[in-house]
Image: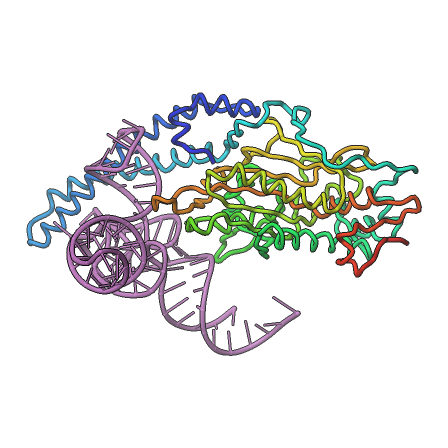
Length: 430
RNA sequence: GGAGAGGUGGCAGAGUGGUCGAAUGUACCUGACUCGAAAUCAGGCGUAGCGUUAUACGCUACCGUGGGUUCGAAUCCCACCCUCUCCGCCA
């Protein structure tokens, strides 16, 4: 959520910056709502003030045993008007809130202006495209060839966009997750957390998935009390439960930065991506991810993002995978993000780079929605900056390992760093 | 699932219809005392919003959440959520 103070003082400026990401801010409507809000709020508070002082007088008069009928008749009129005007105010504020919650974040000044992913800015390539002296297979062929990847059984159990992993592949998947967790906790200073996979609507609102992107989520209806219904939502990323740990909290300054890492499954409806990436593990309704989350002092968020990006890159480097880092342009960054770097890993069978991590700084956008604050050096509560990034998506990393470490006979060489997690195994073969 | 207790400021904890935004303690800040510290004493110290651009002034809202009663609600009524204790069931 954007700061309403900034909208009031520099509406045209905000509109211009949002326009760079293709969002049209309805400035006329905002101004209109604000004008109404202001007059109604002032009037409401005036009336409330009148009522409060009259009630006080009634109390004092009654204490002395005086007649209060005159003043009570007067305050009754105030009450009448208040009743209607308070309703108006609540409605107006709700409208403003809806509008505010629908506004995406303002891009950081370093974000290149562009319309689509074609305008993203490549920052660097690390490693080099591997050479193969045979025709490479894709991960589906390799996985099925090893007897460890089974989409048909998954389709029977659940449907499209699910998978069953077996044997060595299932273990390799687990090894990757363990390796990533250990690296981030032992070498990068993150605290491992285990969190709920079902969260409430407030949490989804806090990180920005709600109210705008409900169709991307799996909703789990839940009967509460008498006829009351509340929903749980399956998390689309660990970002949601982990970031919301600080919702409605005031973190002591000396505890910053907070750095958490979580390994969770992620659930996405993929409502808007019918027909895309239908083959293989790339786009699934359920996948595992190691997520890095930081809550930092506002002065530190830029440096923290570079650092967090480096933590994710470390995993790829240790795994010996070729990748590139891309800075997303204004037209491609996510709703809540101020600045996002994607890490794209080389997939030989697709002869291209595919996203394997996305690292973002949200500045105060999420913190404002969550009221996640810290106590600054003046002792005053101030909004935190939040960041997160995948470190890494486990399923896609598995894909990258299969495709980049394949041999002509369809076996897979296990990267050095994973062998301790694989009982010393050096290759996966049929 | 059954029975009971409870949710109040950073923390602890009073407050059962009217000068209560809220006693008191503690933490914290400032000052006095001290070579310095501790102790003691004095004062200060919630969040958000609006007027209003303002760390100054005024007003409003906020005592788990949402409704209701009332001129007036932390306090009374209703519903819900959460926490704790005991019993039952359970990976």
